Image (cartoon, rainbow, N blue to C red; front, side, top):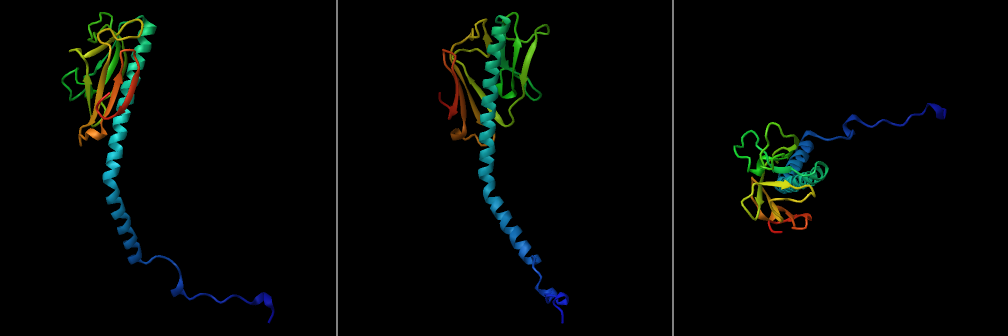
Length: 185
């Protein structure tokens, strides 16, 4: 018989490869168990990311207020913003805004220009630590705060309130801004 006509023997249908339904269910159960074990640490990771993101946003707002004060010759204010569900403009957990403050009273009047607004950081409590009873930050024409020199903000998760995961944004009297972990500068 010529070699061109020979074919290899075929495998029986019962020996074909693949997963049985029982094997597939066991692998799904193992994957679900691993995901259930990883979820608590993933929640902490997301919480720490949100804290860092909120601190970075407020730092960006401070830099923007400085730049706008230099550009406009002063009269720029950074303060907590009112938002739906927030009754108090002094609550920085509701977000913050930078605006041109012609009369330096810390209140956004209808004739004053809003420069930028940051929304409330979701699930984050923002606490200002001002040395005096000031509730807003007013910038002079040299890009320095008129109503105080050094201050800090503490960022904590509204859900777990873990002090170890807290972030702090500190500004020194010289104008240096830094962020760190914990609640102390």
